[in-house]
Image (tube, rainbow, N blue to C red; front, side, top):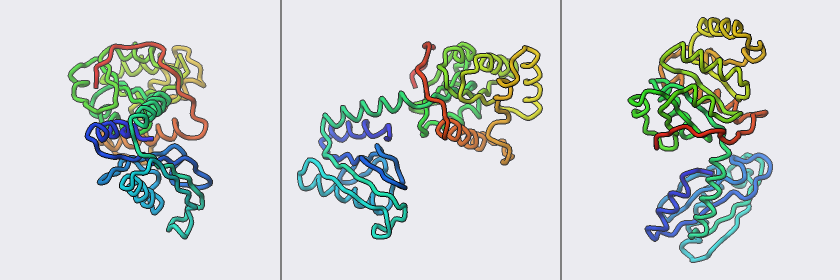
Length: 286
């Protein structure tokens, strides 16, 4: 469910514009979206998606007919086969409801629960690549947190939904919950090493990535072994990040590759469940 739907519905209700919430209530077999996907439909706009194609086009038309006719709710069942111009092979049941204050309250609660359940990704370093990565992660179903002791670098990042922390990255790492993902890309190799050693010693992360070359990885791993860190833990460090099939050092490309790596790790089969934060760190509203 898109986190933007509640805000858009609140604006529509305030302006007195009728709106309908279309929810994918049931999805069987192969379908473009999972149950719970939703979109908001007004007379002249659509926000969100239930999967696109003919089925979505019919749902938009049905929602607008409901708004024009004054009905409160409707339901659609569709088999996604040749007769609908789609070949997914599954079937869906859609619920369409005229939105009101109760709809908004329920939508806000649902979106808050969805946000709380998202995996946390902590990016250490708000330089060029760190900011690019935060931008790549912002529209994805993660909670993104970027940490840097340099106020001027954090101030350059104005992405909505990205938590910005001005403070000690090591303290932020210690405060992060279990099962979080960590991407280390600070301005100093010594700080990178300190962060990685601290997180490897904890060992309760879902992902730990370090920006750098194979040479940097080898140097860091030797140091971690000298510290007595277990080999199984040391081997979990991902460096270089983003895979090695694309040799492109532009920040936006690195960010796209790392974002894809995080999607695979955090949202794929066997991903660790998220956990609540264990401590609070001073934040800058953003």
